[in-house]
Length: 193
Ligand SMILES: Nc1nc2c(ncn2[C@@H]2O[C@H](COP(=O)(O)OP(=O)(O)OP(=O)(O)O)[C@@H](O)[C@H]2O)c(=O)[nH]1
Ligand SMILES: [Zn+2]
Image 1 (cartoon, rainbow, N blue to C red):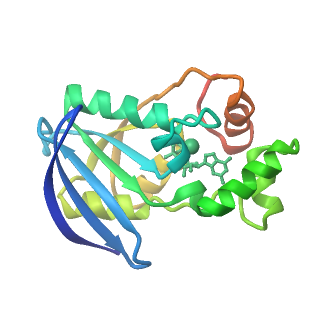
Image 2 (spheres, rainbow, N blue to C red):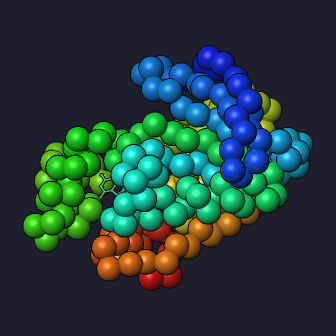
Image 3 (cartoon, helix red, strand yellow):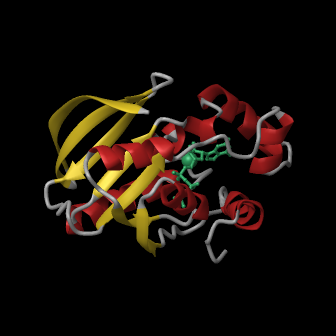
């Protein structure tokens, strides 16, 4: 399912990480970040984060991704833990199609309807590569930072035990409140919005 290509040391403002690239069968390059404080035989803190260039890099306010990524890195920096960055931009539809989806949302549709108007399911992602990366480094028990029950289900289906869900609640703003509402109402996210 995944093959480790290379590992390097990556110092960051959240501390020092061992950072590896894993290629999946489609050639996607996923990134594993293991903080130096991590004790691999404990139930490690884990964030599985799907790529969101606009949110993660430009801190777009249309979604909650940028805040979630940096909050996760902060928690991992303080406690040790692992981040797996999956290269499935736009819930798997890619960057250009996500931009088309934003255009449709600007015309009054929600994030799910926009995907469907473009001919995609609401969510095209798979979290399996993350389960395989965890197995490759010998981890089978985690505490996961997420509000998305689907991530927990897919880990369990692939024999990773999820001992705890740690919520990752981000302050909403005028640009993302409909997006967060839709995630809760139509996608089953545990958000309390
Ligand atoms: N198609 C589409 N994708 C979006 C939109 N807004 C954000 N995304 C993508 O949604 C994904 C969010 O990923 P995550 O933050 O890992 O996961 P999540 O499902 O929000 O669950 P959490 O673990 O609670 O954060 C990223 O791939 C974003 O690029 C949108 O309006 N349309
Ligand atoms: Zn985003």
